Image (tube, rainbow, N blue to C red):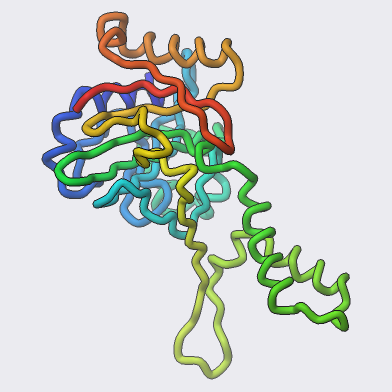
Length: 273
């Protein structure tokens, strides 16, 4: 059985090793439940898919390591709670696809995947580690974020009453898709080609490591944060964690509710390092 809950269990089992690794990608992640492992390519890790049982598996995990209590920038991929695997695996011969296939996954049998971010921050000999669902950072849809950002650029740079509003609207629409910036562009007579990258930085409201915004996330703790919108969803999260960890280990966890100022409630399972 594979799932993000089993991944969380493996982090707890090896939590003392977080202090021993200088880089997060050096941590001994559980290869037996992973379908791929990458460096510099999204996703850094992926959980295997289950063909039967309680969990679907297939979650995608991105690593974010920082030497301070801030979250390092997201390069090229805007953080979201879910991603379609067809937008990530662009070729049946790509590295991510091949790794997943070799691990036994029917890659496209689960197209929409939950996304988690394993975040570590360090400060004066202490550290905080959070495995957090991507919806923590997705307060508006990614396409709206890109579109509204470039709408501001268009309005600022084309602030001319003589420019047709319809033309401006078409320009805004054309610039609203994140995927167009990842394409390589070649200019005649240029000796280099170019592609643009989207750089996303986390505001203080969404910095789960920040002691002022989220004092519940203590120094030297390992945390697992998931959204819930009803009491039933909260109880389901607790039940899922308990079914993987067992009653005895579950009692060792501290369960906290934190309020994201822009995105509702998250349930946090916390243990000391």
